Length: 251
Ligand code: PGA
Image 1 (tube, helix red, strand yellow):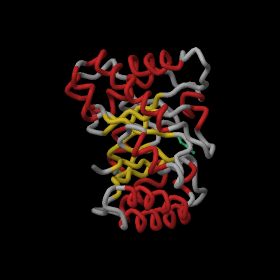
Image 2 (cartoon, rainbow, N blue to C red; image 1 turned 90 degrees about the vertical axis):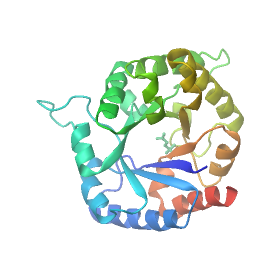
Image 3 (cartoon, protein in one colour; image 1 turned 180 degrees about the vertical axis):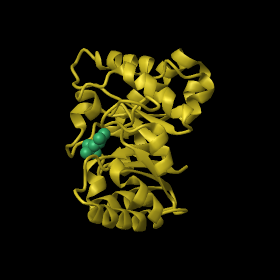
Image 4 (cartoon, rainbow, N blue to C red; image 1 turned 30 degrees about the vertical axis):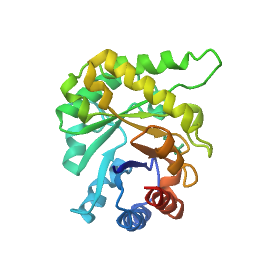
């Protein structure tokens, strides 16, 4: 099975010139792999041109965020339809950094449904801010899933990706252990089954939070996940190439 790797560039790089270079090295690294499906989520302002240069190649594109509204007076926002028109086929929804800026689970609920209506694959991000021994983080994740997936039907579950990202791991160098991820993957599946029935067993889950060239293969092997969402390592061309190669070598 192919691993889904989502390269979330966040607000990087500063210029289109650098973005082109980064996409080119990323593409070369991706071309050397057979077991990776690569999705690049560049800053939206670079999306159309990057996509135009890579038409027909094996990279798909994602929005890092989008409005759930169709159009209108929403200064600074980008609609899903506009993202789709620019070439995005995936949309990240409810990333921890967006939630930290005020996005609520209710917002994610609307965005997941709107992305599906726009024929895009929503990547719904869930994950707790902190972990304590009392394990209330399971409740946090359950609530994010319950609200985020409330407006979809069970037949749409196959078109949704859940990205589990413990906020405490994002941006660092240390992932959580694949064993803990495995436990969380089981919990996520169980929760989605409770919400949407047996089809939930097949929901695609990826892991995000300090995924690096050193831990990617282990996480895919033992973490019970279908892929990874990669932040800072995805904008460091040599490290990202090493990450893709590590996955390739392990499959
Ligand atoms: P990171 O970001 O790889 O830099 O930790 C991951 C994420 O944004 O989920």
